[in-house]
Length: 224
Image (tube, one colour):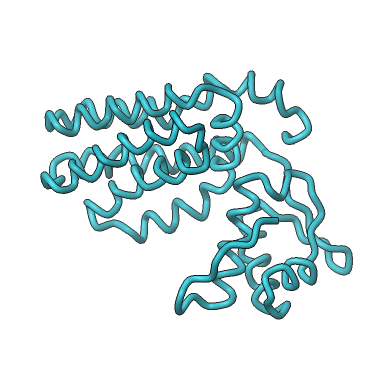
């Protein structure tokens, strides 16, 4: 488990939630692994209470199964839950990105362009974790442009199932195709072709169905 830095004014519960979630998404805690509240509390230098609260919250998303008196297990990747997460995210982001296209300022577009350029830079340096962070920031920008951050936090919590799949895809296929799709979205943004933006974002978010077979073959033990 990778220990991450605690934000200023972040509660212990929120810190534990973020740390556990990030380690699950980045596959530092592998699907099917058993984990204990005590071990995590010691790793993060916390008491068990905030870790327990974080684990309870994560169990609501079905990413963790809690077995009283025995410990907890990180769930295997269930494509039914991935599909549900993609359905919710694509439904929300299709409408939201189309709206962002109409509201984006010149500065918003410059920020998106900088983001995509950095994706190319980190790809050339094989910094895959940076690419994933920038991918997330690219999509988060749409929520910020439309001032719908409550939607963002709701989608982020559910998206944990999809995010693990995205992490596997990033490390098992050529990330250039993902970056190219971001470029296409950005080009449509610049042209204020909002219908095209909506079409491209739906295609982008649903591309997992193209990659699923290959990823399952490479990581069979990770899937339910």
